[in-house]
Image (cartoon, rainbow, N blue to C red):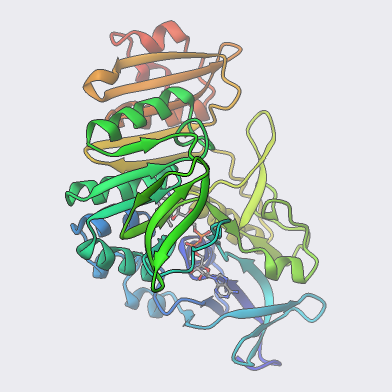
Length: 410
Ligand SMILES: Cc1cc2nc3c(=O)[nH]c(=O)nc-3n(C[C@H](O)[C@H](O)[C@H](O)COP(=O)(O)OP(=O)(O)OC[C@H]3O[C@@H](n4cnc5c(N)ncnc54)[C@H](O)[C@@H]3O)c2cc1C
């Protein structure tokens, strides 16, 4: 749309969050123009399968699209793919695209996601060193797995562990190197981290904790191994780097919007500018009773913030305050997490870790704050309700298999 035509809603970033904003604007009754702009050459797609079914080979690319192409036409969402937004002019309410075009906006949503954190040692630019954020990344890793024998995963977070599980399932030799003294150090409790270390070791993965990376070895531009500070080298023909992401805040910072660990938003996804909202992995906000400033990198967060953002652009308050939830699939173990376990002072178990079927309930000062469910989806579903309703579940009830959790969720 050329400058001067009627200004509509513009969404930057055609991923999980951006698509949600566009669809929720229609659901909220907004009838004007919506333009959804994405840098990648694809319709919005699901990222979670990229490290799971896509690598395992049990899902095809055609199944990744979040919506069929017809939906954009039907909902009158003008989807521009393969084009990057390079600047925001807030006084003029206009965005500039890299191809020189400009678009005026009445309301603007930033849903720019995040990018891979670069490896802080030499050798990361060689062939055979790959990270996983996008469909293109997943294509490369899938192709590399076909020809690989020895895989080293750098980083024991969820994505690294999911890749490790997929590579192991294909029968490859797999090592996971984690710098911290436990897996999942940023997001899981020590108990859950230990469960995952055992799980991977039982599947034949070499899990090295406290592994300080020194560099990547290579020959002729191809990676051959990973070296740690203790001087040891592990041979590898594929190195997958899973050391986290950096939020894409350049556009927001460039136009002076407050950013700290992400574009700062409130529970309604509002930024410091009433005409601009932001959602998903690029945002940070105060969450939970403790009010910690968090960047929640999850589908739920992108979707719920997307709904809030659409409402906010139309002048309505729809705060997102539900307990955060997340999942991970590794081998035959489905993990579902709800709530924030940081600062818990008590944990009780329901079910049996030895059977790989249990839920860990976390309490702080007697109040339930989080639940990790392993192969117990029913506990997770009822747990979401318990947390959102601040139900008065006691640790004794949680640990008692005979106690019906659902009785407190009604
Ligand atoms: C491998 C993998 C596995 C995951 N597994 C899980 C899981 O099991 N459970 C879970 O809850 N979450 C999971 N996640 C996280 C989840 O996918 C993200 O939280 C979610 O995709 C965030 O949505 P978003 O819209 O903020 O960002 P994205 O989906 O990343 O979309 C952002 C889009 O914006 C585009 N963009 C950026 N800058 C610009 C610009 N200037 N102009 C135009 N376009 C731009 C990007 O190219 C990108 O396409 C996983 C993520 C990955 C990568």
